[in-house]
Length: 282
Image (cartoon, rainbow, N blue to C red):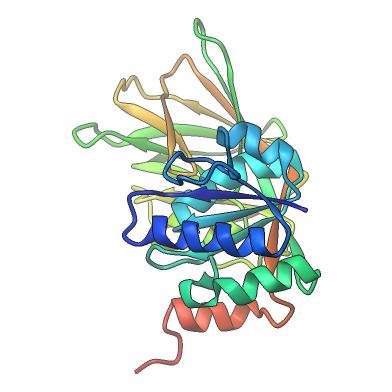
């Protein structure tokens, strides 16, 4: 079995965990590939993340949800399952705690785990001059105005039919997995990760009746900027960003790819909500 390890080196203690994990996997007879040169072990292959996901049977992510999202944008289209070990903060999708990594690796090597497939979005950004950009995301696609820009007008169509022209600070198009991220902060609903849908949530809408709407995963969303504002951007999973003008068109639909998350068989989505969101705490 080949296991790839993706790490965020800037996190305190991450390199130490990487060294221990690589040695543990090698003792188990597992080939290890990493995405960083911090190890001084000649038996551990180093390559780019893009190449790593094509060469392994599973990916282990050492970091927070941001590192996990970055890895899943590559691992999802490659069809490789991902195990997240949380070295960051909240850790909604990096569910394995740092003191549990050895147990998680044992489950991975023995096959004692479940793979939960998560819906992804495919976003196509088309402009008048530059080449189009196509991205597959696990969490969300967000259109937002700059710090000094006025409120913006966004025309949103679903399968060619107008939903609304939103006057707002921006718009979030979210997967069920992303519903507990920016969408939740903007007043959107929490959606169980196995519900096949797309959530559209306006950011600070001028009209309070412009509420979030839940769409079928079979529908195609098209968005254009109507207002003449230059300081507007579209971001993918909060990590990749591009300018968005009235000459651009953004199309979002359910991706043909799905992220495969490696989870313990005892994993319960509602216990995650209680723990991460402090439900029941007075």
